[in-house]
Image (tube, rainbow, N blue to C red; front, top):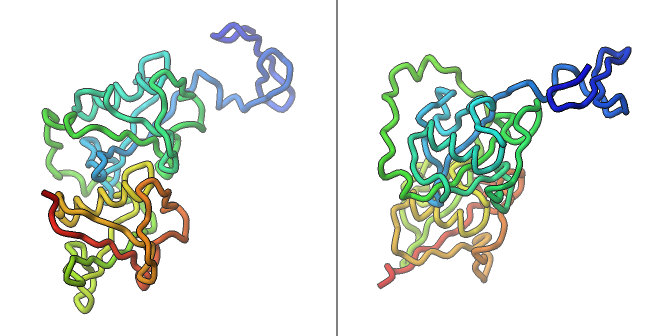
Length: 262
């Protein structure tokens, strides 16, 4: 029997299908004709963006679309265009699409994507594709619908993980806007999913500048309070692992804000 792409499909005794009858078997439930959900997260270089179509009551920053909604051929460009369409953003060509949260480089627009398998880009809420957009794409974006009904969405049961930091200015420790301990108000924390990809010192700095409201100030990061040299902007930070600078609340990283730049 011929498949849609012209290959010959042969049934085997195990109830599986083999293309061309030459091995490489796959379960019949995973043929190319099957559509699936594609999970995604949105960011600017300053941090994450709330989706206009949230799927969890306790995490409004992740959403999903059906692979059948993406115009063929399935490329990075066509996926970006549809996500931007449903999220009400213009200028999708200015966005950068990453295959996952751990990727260091974005895809070329012409990159082909396997969107019709049970595995592949964005196949799980735990491993979504990531779209980083320019702030200009948000200028005409309609505001998301009210939170009415958001409590009817399911809650996502995932362990919260943070980057901990102790904030300093030129004169010493400063009160953090994300402090969580009244007895030590200079220590703040941000959810690891707040930090945009790629996960580098620069992206963490952009995020901290945004949440602490110190735009225009020179911010430097040290790996820990005993370090003597600052981290380079291009250094990678493995925030999806269990051990990275700032992963423990008793070992916060010490970002230092200098005077405002002139």
